[in-house]
Amino acid sequence: MDDEVFRALADPSRRQLLDSLNQRDGQTLGELCAGLRMARQSVSKHLAVLEGANLVTAVRRGREKLHHLNAEPINAIADRWISRYDRRRVQLLADLKTALEQEPVSDQDFVYTTYIRTTPERLWQALTDPAFTQQYWGLQHDTDWKVGSRIDWVMGDVTMSGPGQEVLEYDPYRRLAYTWHHITPEFAKAVELGDEVAARAGAEPLSRVSFELEVEDEQVKLTVVHTGFEPGSTIRSMVQNGWPRLLSDLKSLTEGTASI
Image 1 (cartoon, helix red, strand yellow):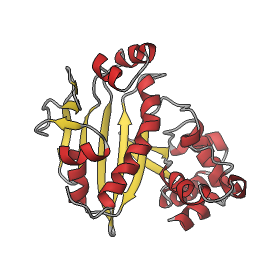
Image 2 (cartoon, one colour):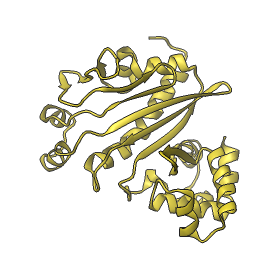
Image 3 (cartoon, helix red, strand yellow):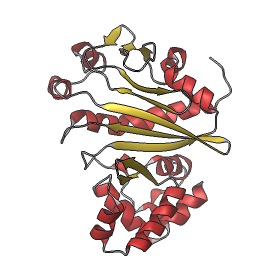
Image 4 (cartoon, helix red, strand yellow):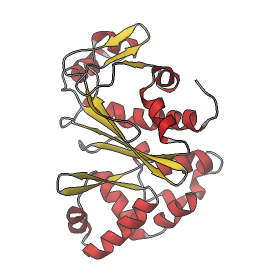
């Protein structure tokens, strides 16, 4: 996968597309063409290469197809290469101001795609089984996983519950969705949120997260979409940094051989 990422980044036009998505995530093909003054056919070809390298994730929203910058491959390269060598020797990455190194500049959906060498059954268990979620997430979901059922988030002695917290979709081994939890005073204290940040986050409406699983060869493509944020959302800035770490831990757990 590293070779595909480096090949994709070697073209300046593709780096332009990534820069554009880094500035404003979730653009349509037409918006990307207009913003970069590139022919539609050229943009389509470049996007296909970027999607093939997992640097861009496309999500359909009604009749529109929205393109999102995906930081996971860059995160993997950083872990493998940049941590070993001088950053100045990796000039290829200079034009890509990755989401991992930038403050979020958009109130668009958060989209993240990763490939995990596991089975959909094991990955599904890791997403829904409390014994699994406790290992990499440090919390459990208390629910019967029926659509419309209440879902409480339990983190040690703290339980996050409230109106609207419910299971939205439950299609085993394919798709899971639920509402993100209320920011309760107990939760804010447990994670040491400042009073001002906790007040802003607690005043926001519930957001929604979905997990889509697709089998590709001997891997499972996992796409996480976190949506429903207000402009300037405090929670959006929090999950921007939290999701990559969480999904990295999920990947490590499910690709391991240890059983629960």
